[in-house]
Image (cartoon, rainbow, N blue to C red; front, side):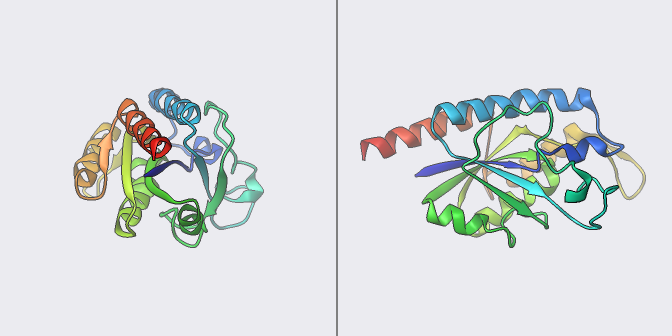
Length: 194
């Protein structure tokens, strides 16, 4: 089965948000870059996803007009097999990604990017419902502290743990960078032997 790494919304737009934290982002960059480099070395195609939304004005960091819809600084450079723009949480809604994956014969997605519980989780659930196998690489996703509706804080680490718990075994195989790369290399070897 052919795998594909999906790098979701790893874009400079997030650095413009008040919740951005370089210290929180540092471990994410290390994991995301290891995943990118490992997939590149294993000839696993890498797809880049950008999120764009309204209003289409310079002051909105997710508008193309802002200049921030570009790869985030700190991300390892890579040659994308394809790049798609999305306007919804799932990267599979009206972006053309689903068509491209089908045309390429991709059976398994390796999901990574920003944010853990938002676009990464939503894309994972959607992909699973459409029939793709999904490896969800929690360490190669990034999120930030939030506030619950009752005003209590919700730590990013707790959001990541909750996301992993609800996805694993139902919508995805939750795995580490090393595990995802091992699975992708094994599949590449199986494909070469066939």
